Length: 87
Image (cartoon, rainbow, N blue to C red):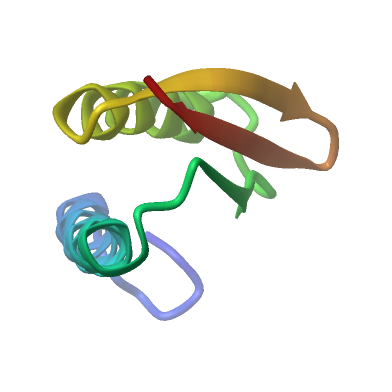
């Protein structure tokens, strides 16, 4: 449960909806602007077992491959920074 009383299943469903929304927006950006690189930052706070980082890495690699990009750079500090490069 989180501080709002939501259960893990609800949180996972919410996370899935958020990623789906972000990836739709990124796909639209790619179709409209054809960027050579895409950079973004993802929060990792509250993730003591790195499950969020593993999820981000997996989703980003899948998204990149499906859209003609490769993961060029991944930096881990207090947040996760990703840079995708057009293949």
